[in-house]
Image (cartoon, rainbow, N blue to C red; front, side):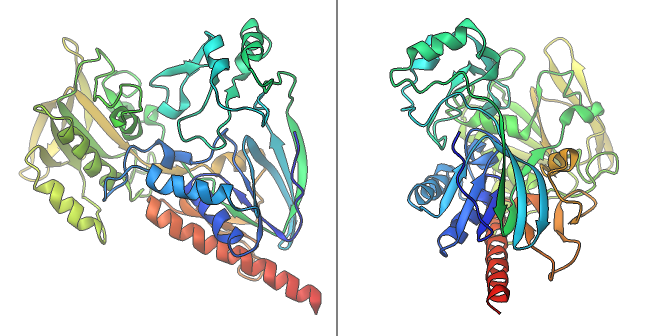
Length: 435
């Protein structure tokens, strides 16, 4: 695997989601050299897994397609997928970064023809659809994947299936002999845009995510609604594949809770309000009920909230759901709690429950393996606040959801700010060297 040369005049952007792409492009279009690394096989992050944005209800391809085109046309950005930071040493202006490169087993010769996928029969869970479906072990991550190159899953490398994939490739792009590599690069500043991961719903025991098939997360629901998702855009119950007509959305599932996530993730309310519109658009007699502590729709989102409030297919129950039971006759979840507007107990049955799980920073994974320096300051929820030495020592910056729970729009703003700070570091270092 060829590794691009990096120097102390380069900015390293870690994470290839919407924040990382934005930070890389903003710096590159200002004339800076940028290395953009992403640990998965494709750019786009969780934004690419959304069906629609709020409040305009447009598809993420609107923004991602433009940004990917900008990336392809900018020689100042060097993209490395399946690459992970494992260690950082040095100081601002002169960081030595160790990178681990995981093999894709497919070279740049790949034309994305799909012949390798046709040749194999082995399947793996589809991570893009949060495991709700399966795909071939030789696969293109998703339709908008960048780079447009297939991936061979490691599970078939030393098997007959791997040989089938290799033999089927008409351009000899499959290399089953690829191995993991570790390289070191020098950069002047680092932008951590490592994004977020959904809180593990299995930990919220009273809601039975691990026991009841018709309790799913808001991210899984997002994929169900997408026509390119596992059900072709149909809102079907996991238990029996029947259309879901009476859907409950539980807010703050594991958030604002000392036993789980202490913080508010900011986007969950708007995400659920958006998803009620998927139910309405599905037609028929579908209806949504939102169980909430309070609705946090700020700035321009208030108009969207009022629009949903006026929707006759949507109801609101001001309550923190205490627990979920199961109607074993039909696998319907039954929500128990107290409606605080009137203070009466309820036991409401729905055919599908969607948990609005909160956001926690993916950066915690880097803490575990030593890839994040100890002098990065994290808040109580492990979001990046800055450098321990303050502005004078700052050469690494958090961006997007690595720094705070943010929606797409605010993530882009945060990434732009982090990119400008990184550029300032390089300019200050260059100025001091001249003096």
